[in-house]
Image 1 (tube, helix red, strand yellow):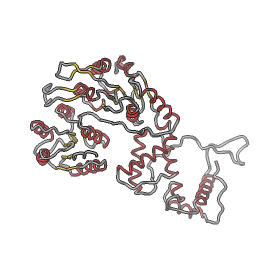
Image 2 (cartoon, helix red, strand yellow; image 1 turned 60 degrees about the vertical axis):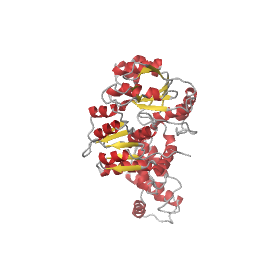
Image 3 (cartoon, helix red, strand yellow; image 1 turned 180 degrees about the vertical axis):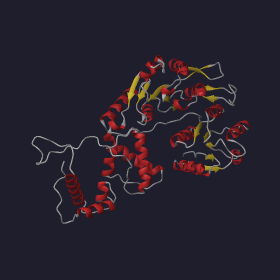
Image 4 (tube, one colour; image 1 turned 45 degrees about the horizontal axis):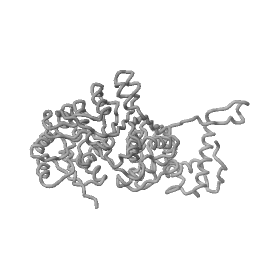
Length: 465
C-alpha cells in the first residue's frame, strides 16, 4: 500500500501565479493548497504535514525570506522553493544558504519547478532520487540509438566514470538514468546535480554539505550531494559550467572519494559512481584555459555521445507517439491522432532544440487538437532539391531543377485525385483526404472546386516523381 504524499502549498499574492502552479502540480497528481499571504500559510504550517512550499519573496506584510527565518526559528523543517519576479544573486544565495531547495524567477520553467518539487518530495533537499524500474526510457530503433544502448550495456555493470556528450535537449539525463538502472547500484539513489544552476558561493555547500553555524544563515546541518549519493550514482549535469577556481575541490572528491562539510574538519567518505554530462566541447574548453585538464581526463574515462535528433529521423514516429500519449495523460487532454501528413512534417524539420523541442511541439499540438488530428506549427524544411526531368520542349541533354506553373498545377491536381480516390472521396474526419494531406477540409473543398474535380474523373495512375 502506497503512503499518501502530503499536500504542496503555494504562497503568492498573484492569483494568476497561484492558479498556474496549481494546474501544473495537479496534472502531476499532487494535492495543492493555495495561500495569498505568508501569515495565512504560517498558521497552516503548524497544523499538519506538508511536502513543501512554493513561496514568493515579495509578499504583503511578511516577506518570503522573513517567513523562512520564522519557520526555522520555530523548528519547522519545511522544504522551500522560492518563486519570484524580483530575484537577484545575493538574494538567491541568502535563501539557499538558509536551506531553500531552489530559487526560481518568473516566468518559471515548468521542468525546473517540477524538478525542485521532486527533490522536496524525496525527503532530501537538493537531491533527485530515481529508483530502479523494469523498462528503459531510451526510445528509438535507429542504428545510432542501438549503438548507444550497446555501449551502455558494456559500461553500466562497471563503476567506470561516464562522460555523456551531446547538444542541448538530446536526452543526456535519460542516458544517465539508463546507465544507473542497468548498474549494480540500481537499488541505491541516483542524485542529479545541475551544475549550471548553483550560485558560485554555494558550490561547496551543495556538493559537500555544511554544519549548523558554518556561515550566516546556516540554521541546521545539511547533507551535500556526495553524501546523499553514497552507495549510488552522482550525475553531474552541465559539468562544463563549474567555475574554474572550484574545479580543484571537485577533482579531489572525485579522485579520493573524500570530502569535508563546510565548517567541519572531519573527513567523510562516499562510495559513488560518477556520470557527467555536457553540451560543451571540453577539449576546447581545456585549450582555452576554462576547464582543468586533469579534471577533464578524470571525467573522460568512457565518453558516450548521443546523436542530435536530425541524425535519427527514423526515431521520430516512436518518439512522437510516446510524447502524444504522455501529453494526453499529463495535460488531461483527449488523445490526438498522428496523421501521415503530420508525421511527414515532423520528419522534414531539422529540430535545433532536439527531443526537448519535439516534446514541446507535440504537447502544444495535443492541447490544440482536442481529440482530433494533431497539427504542428513548424516551418517547412526542404532537405533536397526536387528532381525534375526535362520536358520534350527542352533542348536535348538538358535538365531543369524547377517546375513551371502549369506543371505545378498538374502535379497538385493529380495528387488530389490520387488521395480522393484512395479515401473514397471522404473529405473530413479520421482517414479523410484532408487529414491525409494535412490541410483543413474547407481548404480541400476550395481546391476541388477551383480545379473543377469530379468524382467520375479517373485518378492518375501515379503521382509524377
